[in-house]
Image (spheres, rainbow, N blue to C red):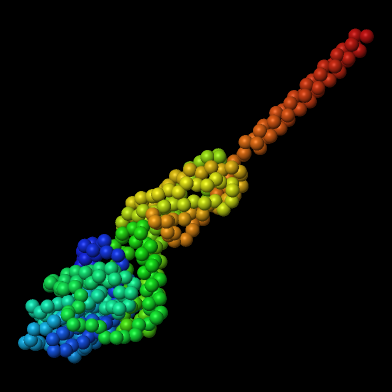
Length: 385
């Protein structure tokens, strides 16, 4: 696992500028001169294995192991880097869902040794990472597919410690296979979400998820695994999106003009750039200016947003993050604001009313004192008479 994570980090770091390189899977095949090593993915996004079926394929007599038989001929190898990385992952210890310890560590280690020996100095080509159906993947974007080929060759070269050529050997073409329409639909939706997330941050987890996502375009992926992976990828993409968010809160304004402290969380390991938009649900608060923000990695940033209140009462502020291109990012966070502000007209009325009350009270006191003096004077006169 440690070796795999190092290889993965180095590889993605060297190609972090690439947009959404995908993943998929294939099978094993052999003829006199071309050996294809591929297989459907056995891992979910967390790195845990869905099953231990690879043990049978890698063991003596298995469909992958038989491809490594000695040969005096020069052969050409066409290999899926996704499968090799899975085997490397197995060789360093792994977990099978839900929490079982994988049993194929030694078998995987032996297979990798045998594979490198069998290849020798033969030419090696890289299949697209995960062996997606090429014709389908190209329909989404030829540019992305070209980048995928480059990524695949880099990762396979690192895994095998050997020079690798991007793309397929001359005169090779994939066999026609049907692809589940639901898988295509899931891939399209999640790909769009990742494209949006990539506009706010270049965290490596985004590009790695995009690579792994293309397992859904593997025509040999069975229905059960397809459904499980779709759920797993959806959860993974949603968790990635939630790394950047506005925290809801409650606030009280005690003056007409104040600065509202809005907290934005960036849990990405890379900086993020967004625009913060605030809008009031009613007219008690005037329109608020948008704020373009640069957020440090793994940070909580409190942004002081100037607001102007024009009437007392309660109002909801809707906080929306957008990309620098103006696309909405995630849902709306609600900020509950209570405005305890007395307006100028009401203030004048209350001030005048206060003065009148003070005047009336003064008049009463004066009258009482005057009456008391008059009564006292009359009593004194009465005694003198």
